[in-house]
Length: 300
Image (cartoon, rainbow, N blue to C red; front, side):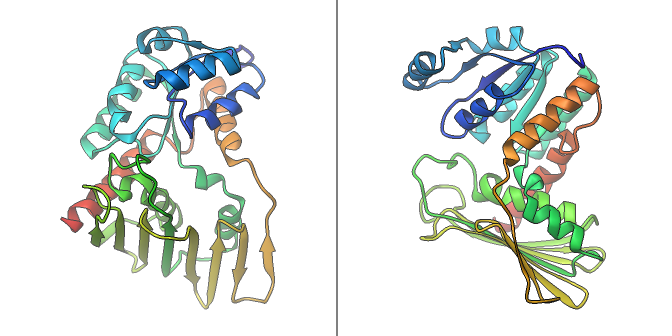
């Protein structure tokens, strides 16, 4: 499969799925077979503008090597399960599933079928955070993550803000602080939906490190920042403005735009072609969904 053209299908071509589609179309040795979406207007527009074919879900799964799943999180489990049962590789946007039980079942199914699972934890490919990880000499004693923005009706509201947005930083803290969790405290508010729209989680690890995560879809201004302490030094990663600063010196590192989505999809394709592990995989999904479930439980 190393040099073969891989056949890819996109399941969900809305606001975010259309971005995935543009990346796949730009890749070498990739044939985008077609797409599936429940919105008939989107389907008609895409067929006309991109000259791509709409397929029923069953038909699309049958004719593809890789399925890219970009649907609401509440639909992840049922669609991913259908793809995996057919023995297909999947790239699936975060969060892996809605519950830990679902995530564990999908991970076991992928293992049984011998197929690859890639998760869209795109921040792992953010050059600001890659540089921050390189600069840290020890495990952070304290890490604070802020991820917020305004309420957008219909956008991700099928699940709590923990699964919809905080999940990015849940993955990052397991990457930066690779120790078991000791305790979890959390609070939440739901000014707009029946799910938590604003959440704060305090996570203490067995090594003594602490992470404080704040995520919200109920704020006027957008914010994406990671603050952490490493020994005697403090770091600030501003993900929106692509800068990294530290108390070591007055120098602020600035980063050019990086196509993290293309990087993650290319890395996943390489894993499929060479039959090697993709680093952000089903087990990553199980771990992050487990922590998200702990946070949601602590809020109830």
